[in-house]
Length: 313
Ligand code: ADP
Image 1 (cartoon, rainbow, N blue to C red):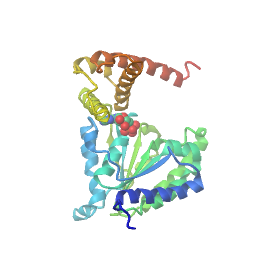
Image 2 (cartoon, rainbow, N blue to C red):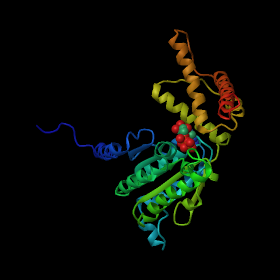
Image 3 (cartoon, rainbow, N blue to C red):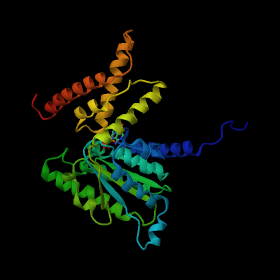
Image 4 (cartoon, helix red, strand yellow):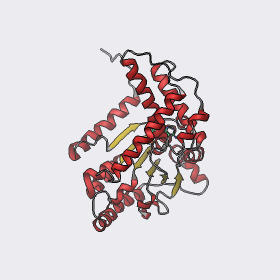
């Protein structure tokens, strides 16, 4: 009997990639949370609030994946990659995904902090194996997330870290240099710590284009807020928020990243869910509810920072 479902090429490609990586996992152990691969992710640039300049610049690099021959027509070779730098939670991963999405590329997400934490200096062997597979795809975007972790400062005392990191970077640089021109492979690295990035990674011919991904200004914050609100309302298939007064909301949100704004919204919705769960009339999320959540979030953040910097230890 014929298969009743038509073959889905996207599903088949994703399955093929998962099989390949199941083989790598047999050798290196479970890589969940350290490495992911997605055939054409569905994040779009429209889902990213603020970041006008970063979005416009990065979008231009889609040409390196979709039509590298255009560079030849202008007498140059396509760039190998870029470094996105800026505070945590500002949308660097979203940008990398959106670039893979518009370029219809397979997205290789290497979470370098988690990878090096597990494998230490030997992470280089695994990186080499992954990159060797990645470059065989028709269009590949390799995302080196938390690229500062290649410094191995989180694992080893400074002199050993410097030595082991130099070896690891050399392995990676060799692979980057080995990527053929016009091969439809593009590398995006991201960091919130430019001070810990090895200069050889951003040397000419490697990731030599730098793009700043700053904290959002008030207009960017409002855009991010509205995007996250729309996403929650779409998921719930109903209205969840009352009319909001952004003139009151934006000043106390000053300095918050997109990830923090998302978290405040999540907490406001969580409070409502708890009320509804207890059989109370929860009502729509109001400006007042959000102001309370912002205040609570700021206080908790202070405690977390004190714990992190050892003041409560
Ligand atoms: P980074 O890689 O810079 O640490 P992410 O891209 O992982 O940050 O962002 C984490 C989450 O925060 C995203 O999944 C998204 O929900 C939210 N976010 C951060 N920045 C933005 C933005 N500019 N627009 C929309 N959402 C954002």
